[in-house]
Length: 198
Image (tube, rainbow, N blue to C red):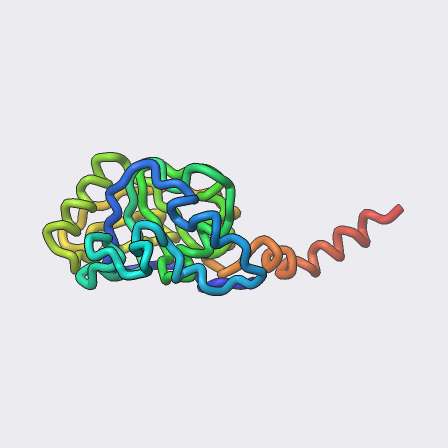
């Protein structure tokens, strides 16, 4: 399944300054029984967003209308726990295209890149700067350039570079998942197979 191409994203951000956010908190296990990929956005951070009677918890950031945008800024060790890809689906389906943290669990990081979410790893110091900027002004713009591999606080010009696997970068910039990538090089694969025959 192809996804939106990721080149440059300029957006406000939603701050979630909580460390060790695991995949069961992102999407509780009871919502993994669906046979279709539908409704995961509604259950993103379900137990943090809603009371047992399904009324919104007013103190949770996703229920605060002053915070919007396509960038989610999380605390250190984001996406730990089980390997469920549904966690990345829920974040994508909610509308986020980038998650920023000072450390990501590897499986969550790869699941995210496979479906069009860019996980950006920054230093602890720069993460603190981002949280402070959003706290001071919820309309703070953050620019993420995948091509340049930089993340910038637009108001001050402060920026950091981030690393990304070259293959994943290529796929994100073209809106490919792994299957799309293989389809895109089908001609080369066929030619290689033909040339490899004895």
